[in-house]
Image (cartoon, rainbow, N blue to C red; front, top):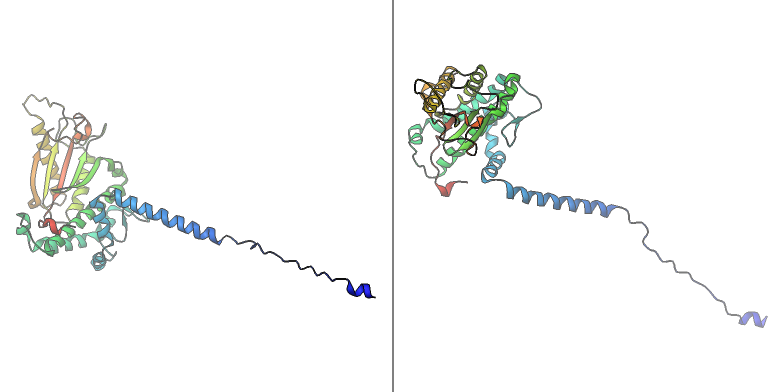
Length: 308
């Protein structure tokens, strides 16, 4: 009994170490969100770097609060009727309306905007009068929006007609210091006029009539210029590329006026022969043969310190 009582009792305590177990995948989600945000940030920096000042101003105009005020000008909610405008000016929408239906809602808006912007100060605008302050800046911005709307409507009208959709590549629309320029150019195997002739093809007449239906909605004056390529025009009567380009420009003027353009809006009709090639590196290229229709800028000259 004594030996049993003196025997030491050993108690072993086992300490369990918790290694944390499974932490789950929540950190992966957070990390993925972080990487996505950083990628979006660097993409934004890249876009800011590659866009031109004109494109930035266009984006700013699109999101400007003043755009909402145009909603009461049209039952469709604005000049473009709620459709988005791509970088090339083409309208993207869920459906493709006919050319006449697509143009109807915008007519009142463009006309209304033009009356507000140019009617009261037409004399001053057309002589290049400089307007200081917010008035000139607002008029110039309004005219810029009108030019973008005309470009979008024209591209849509061409694509909406199956017979004319193939001519879309022969229309170049851009903005110059003089205004919005619409150029109808020749392509290999598809000319606007027969060689050496001023009698245009029916497709050319139809294209000019489509242009007239769009540009008639704003009151800006119009210049029409004919261009030829570098080919020497041989004619027994002594006619040259100067006469040919001038006569083609005048033939285009007649079609535009017959299609609804007011004769008093035609400011200048001229021919430049091959003096201003579209492709200077290749004077014989068909694209140098073209008709250029320019909607002239009528807004007041904005001082440099007020330009966006």
